[in-house]
Length: 510
Image (tube, rainbow, N blue to C red):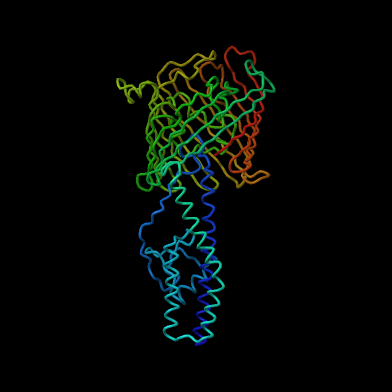
């Protein structure tokens, strides 16, 4: 009899541990309503560079038939090194009151449902009932059981009240939420730009800003329909490609649809994107490889070959991304720009501005990331063909590029080179840089890069830029990035082509 009581006490200790873990689980759920009120923006111009794919919660659970197991070794995802291994081993092999999924997994890192908690608790109570039926129980043992019940009585009552409150709040959220399928997020960028060494037309401190609202909808949990509204005004040092997160000079905060696309998976390794507007060049690729693309304040931090000699981002297109392995990804994309894409008398395949891109990526979570890119654009009039900045005639542009990033832990070096040929000439552009992640504070990036940018029409030579920046996230909503930028514009007819600017950018995500 004493042995049975000892077993009961051990069993109750196991149940107590299960209860305490469950209590922590329900406490964490109480933070959900607050978290739902603080949606963080999905930022970045490239589709796949967004921080996360929108997931739509499904509160209905399909029925799962749990499978009884007799040894913890049957659970394929439980290892002896796991912190709860001994507890699971005792509950499974000594008492047989823990069940696994039909595929012999325990899924210990996933939050349990109330159904699963009820099933596990019922299995343990069945063992208790069996022990009592087999050996009976004396008054002292019954007093021990009652003491254990009384010990948890107040906590169980509290837990029950919190669950009831959570259910009420969930019902309220369902009734009042913006949409059952759509998440609204936003980003606002403010720039204060001060020229230290001025060039004509940029002699005074100015402000530039851009605001975005993203409507991200998901109908399966793996797809995404994005409609982005954008407005902005102001820019600076546009002769060296301007600011990365700003509007256009003279835009006067007119609101327009900047992105309009639908992205969905085909199987496990293929993603298809169909776009009506806002997707071209590097928007089709999984990664631009360079770590300073995004944190950098100047738009030259993004490899400029993606946007030169090609179709407008106002066009329509389709892209396919194929992950051959977890590391090797092939990106393809087609964009039809200009009015022809939306004109039934012309059509997307006869639009005056069309571009094609193919990029093969080698992506890891470690030291080496690289890509090779080929682009063809039907226009080449962007480019200069002589020392006077004369525009090339139309005839198409072919681009061959390579991108490389080496990550040494918190230190990285990266760069790219692009060779472009067009009717009447050729051009070579490049950037190279280095930086430190988590410099002085977690989540920061200190970087410097420079390079020779594509020589467009109106330039007597390739523009040159050097930027140093320090990207500092103060919290999940606010990032401050100060930067110093030097540039040589090489504009035809300009008396002074060099400039030096200080920029302070504040980015709000909500």
